[in-house]
Picture (cartoon, rainbow, N blue to C red):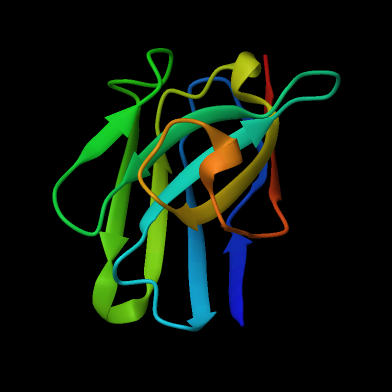
Length: 120
């Protein structure tokens, strides 16, 4: 059994920063890619960033240069450092583990999500 638990969401102002964390427990995920997705009200879940167990890293175009995905394999934790936040970044953010992909359907394990709200 795999558990992913996100934390670090909150309410911030435009231009602020937040750092999300996702801790995994249970089965080792060292061979999985781990990624971040988000879902705003009334919208489909969308890709944000993903990082393989190696060096492959991908970002969505609208977060490139503002968000950084970090992976601490020793702690079984991934992070999403979000800088220069915009109101359009408001969403529930989910971490996931699976084969490296930008399609959320490909991921096997999911956290419960953490709310990020950016006010203008």
